[in-house]
Length: 234
Length: 270
Ligand SMILES: Nc1ncnc2c1ncn2[C@@H]1O[C@H](COP(=O)(O)OP(=O)(O)O)[C@@H](O)[C@H]1O
Ligand SMILES: [Mg+2]
Image (cartoon, rainbow over all chains, first blue to last red; front, side, top):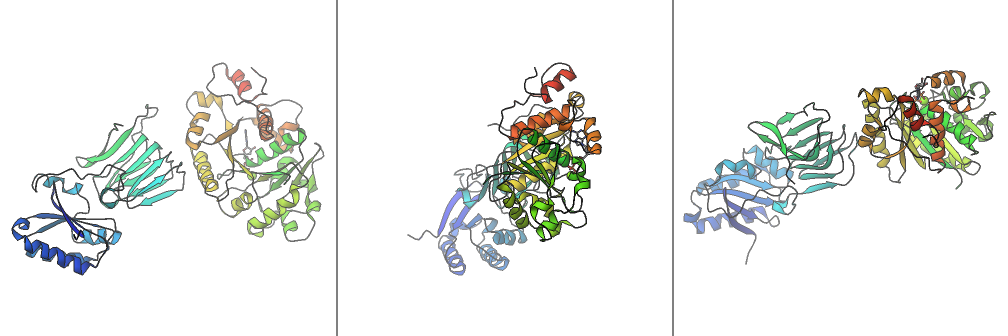
């Protein structure tokens, strides 16, 4: 059986996964054929596309969006770990993360499972991650399109920028930016959260000046339009 | 292979690299080691001044590298101790006159005949630092208990750790003022160690005698009377030779003077 296109019901509607290999023109027309063959099932559906590594330009994605719209199918989000595809997605004003669609929960088909990936599982929709097993000292930087996990401290003057989450199994003193591509669902966790500056998507905060507070594991996340820290339950 | 080459560096200037090089060199020589110190601070030489050997310089490191003299001719002997020599930096040239390869070749020539080669680095993380690091078997990073100095030490340690060959790094904290630490006005040894998390080689207290001795050109270890910093340098020298001289923590109770004696004094003090 051809498994280059698979369908799955999720909280936010329908998840369509298209294998990252094979020619796009051929696969997209195969998807349209599939939709046409079951048009009553698809009519009015809200679709999230999962493309893995596949690189798509803006016009390719725009063509697909138009073709779907003709069939009364709405494209909500495109999940990909290709920087190019992510950029194309954003240019079309579409979401690149499922979390961003939380407001749509319950509107789609029957919820099968939550697709919010555990922070560091690289298997979930192909997210890549970086594991740093040493202290990140002053002057060091780590950039990743996925999540970043540091086993060690992140010292002042070090910087981490990740499209995903940032987890520090140690003392976080440096500057970190999680959800750097705009994902407000990204989080920053540390055994001792005392960053010089902490950013999530477009939000910025600095550590409160509490000296000698007994350190405890904390998680920073965006809530009510600002970054908040809460106890990180391990 | 002969001598161990130990580079003394810091990132930030003025934290006590030259003072430490001079005092460790003299201490090691009094412990009967054959020692050479190399001033790698080309253009800003002052190890010779602190050691009191300035007026005996004829040739310098750049003269050796450029073939104007033999290595042996450029070495200045310190007559106050058995086996201590200084290879001075050039004053009139800049640091680009010497390359990392030159430094390796030069120390390789010295390894046969000595036990320890100490290299005093210039401030900064560029050319001069690279020159001083290239021949190093070990590095001693010096910092003061001060946020900006610790930052720079962290940067330097990161650069050394990023080297392909593994170079052991240890830390020396200089100019600690126990009263200020107790009042919470200065980072404690523990504060510094928590950030830098590398091996602690020793702690040297703030000591006015350092200034006096530098001006005289007599490293503290050569003075007749005991001084807190002089004793601390001697203890560090003994640790460098592999002797097990315990470190005493800052957190112990007791009067300042007694604590000073415990922290910095000879290993037998109680
Ligand atoms: N433990 C100390 N107590 C008091 N003064 C010190 C101490 N260590 C260094 N100094 C002073 O600090 C200044 C800078 O020291 P120096 O060894 O020249 O630093 P660097 O070589 O790192 O630039 C000198 O004036 C020196 O006398
Ligand atoms: Mg100096």
